[in-house]
Image 1: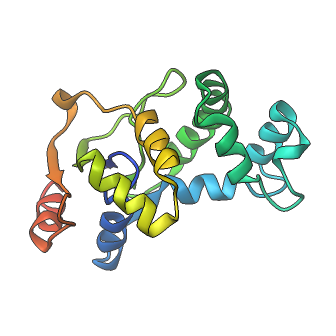
Image 2: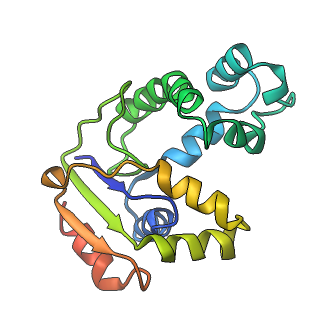
Length: 180
């Protein structure tokens, strides 16, 4: 069984996946997958260097700050990045034995995941922006740009929606576990 944990940036996905891991459940974070893909000699690194140029890598890993600045307000470059990286992420997810998988989106032009269940974490934009500014040192403009990039999933395909305005509760986590 594979259960997707989706939601926009700063909605609580990583917090939920960490709590599920603490309870002994097998988890996978797409952020961790991308971090690995972006290390030198890995396929994501090679693709970024080849397409975007050597100024986007530093000999150890992809320069994520430079790359994000390059794609966050440019939909064409964002689509190119998605086309380069999303298929690699999809392959990793398919090979994974993880039960709970944290990722920002369920589909793009380049990928479509098949999950048994989907959990959507919803958080008002103003709260997500506050979190990004407070915990990640984003500027207000950068936070808004990141929020605007997110594509909400088709709610008909969502099995559980959790409102995270006031953070996750033990009851929220129990509801997710009951999906098993």
